[in-house]
Image 1 (spheres, rainbow, N blue to C red):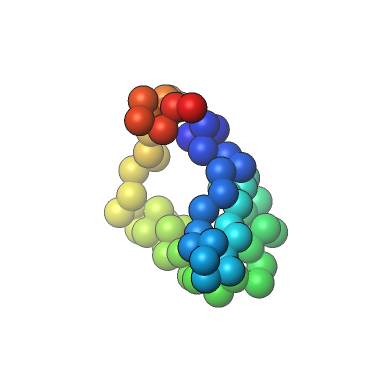
Image 2 (spheres, one colour; image 1 turned 90 degrees about the vertical axis):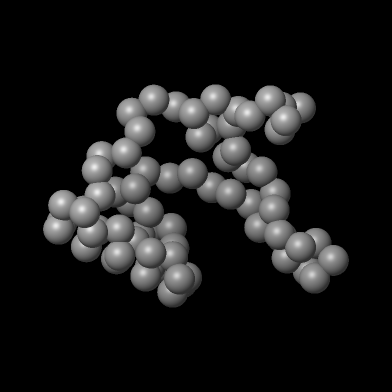
Length: 70
């Protein structure tokens, strides 16, 4: 999903300026230390992986959708 890195999102008219940052999953906790929702998501992910309820996920990079290509 490298094609989406650095894309700005959020509701600008509400003052939101959100830029997507892709980081390795193993070090994601370092980048979201102040974000409770992100930390909860990481905790849930690791718990589900430990219980074998999630697979390894995709092994290939997903191409940019044509409608987003610019």
